[in-house]
Length: 117
Image 1: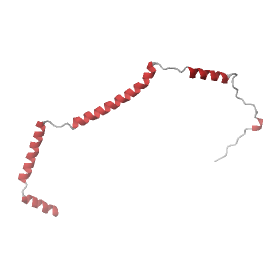
Image 2: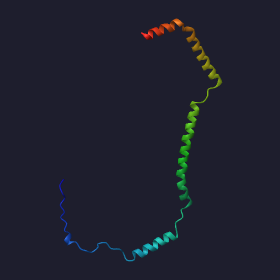
Image 3: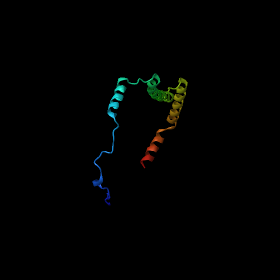
Image 4: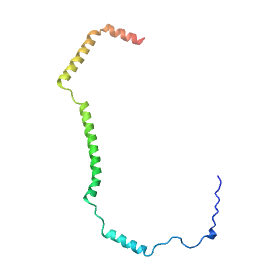
């Protein structure tokens, strides 16, 4: 990397400070700060309520999400009616009975032998 060359001559610089502070700046500054501290500004009702709007909106969003989660869980995990449960139980019983009736001991032995080979 190449070093930068500076052609600035510090010898020609003046010892004077080029920055000036206006007359009475610090006295006026102290007075202004004193007034602000002595008479703080009171926000209006709308300004005070504005911050609570965001909190209320966030709380409403969370409430809607939680309520939605409970609704979805209830919807998909609601117990079936007695009639629906009876139909499912009858169907399962009939399938089990068919499997029991159609399966003989010789079929089981044949299956075990076939799996062993």
